[in-house]
Length: 265
Length: 224
Image (tube, rainbow over the protein chains, first blue to last red):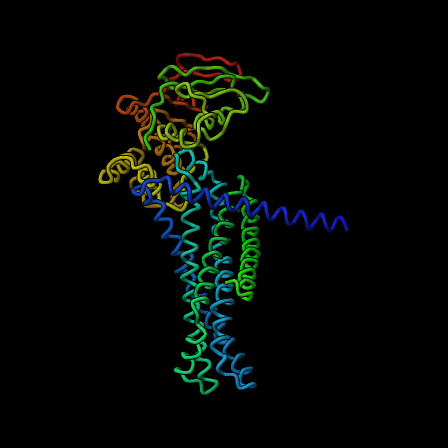
């Protein structure tokens, strides 16, 4: 029993320490940028644009596919179930709850973790191995502001935009599928959506996506820069980044959903 | 950030070998200094750049103990230091030109209108202007080494730290490197040149003093 309790206690303490390190890490990356003059931000800005391109633009095809699949599946299932009870007017609520508030942020986050989280951790890990980070320090270029900040900010912006795009495609696909399997009219569909779409849903969606982006890229950059110099540590860092990002995003989404359900948000 | 002039460097009780030998030395001459012997000479170069703190003793710049300076305070001196390590350290996801431009842009060195010409003029010395738009992985090992060594002189520093600068460098570029060092000494106030090198021919072209770490002595004059 004590061994189990010890294990649980250690697990909790490890995670609290990990979150503390993460907060400090993010703070240092943002603080570093605050100390740079505006005219010297060009290299950082160019890394930011690159990150948005690789994380956001390059992910559009897979996000499109996932949104189409998700919208289709949810519409098919909800049409089948709701028609049994004659509750077709609840369709909007179900779509908003599942796509806008829950599945949209989660699936977008998982896609970004798999594509960009692992890539960022690997890239920074190899920069450590090849002594590029050391070279930046030797040139008085602060790695936190130059490498970490643009990746975090670019990741957050990309995730918010990708999630918005996911919502549009999923809801649009939902109508197309619904109209093809039943006599769903566009006006009825839009009416149920508009009744269910509240400012709270937008806010929850935005918060989930923004903070998921912050978690994913903070964790990825943290693990990448933790590589000490041995090449074998890079895949370990990448794996840790992906696993920890998934756990962090799931825990955060669950927490926010509980707060929403409890009426606090 | 305004860079500080590096007038004086000093080791005081710095450990320089695995058997615990410690060195006290004041770098007063403008001649190149070759670090010889000892197992930690590469680490000493990193120490001079502030990338590592001494396990014992004090490293002073202009009389100030390095380990008492904050990161941003030391950066003012580091801006006046150029370096080239054996591992290179070029940023692999940027072209050679971008590697150089990044440094000038980040530190706002020179007028933006002349940065391109400054980079190209420097690269032409080592025949790198034709490959400036390629990434380090897409050029030869010799070109990568040349780019890494040349980068040490980009900000016209008062101090350069060169770790085996001729190892992997095309043979015909070695005299050009020596001329570049002389030019920077005359035109751009290059005062401190710290080198780790086992290349006898390079030492003959660029004579200097030997800091023999295993003997804890300095040999002035032409390096053996």
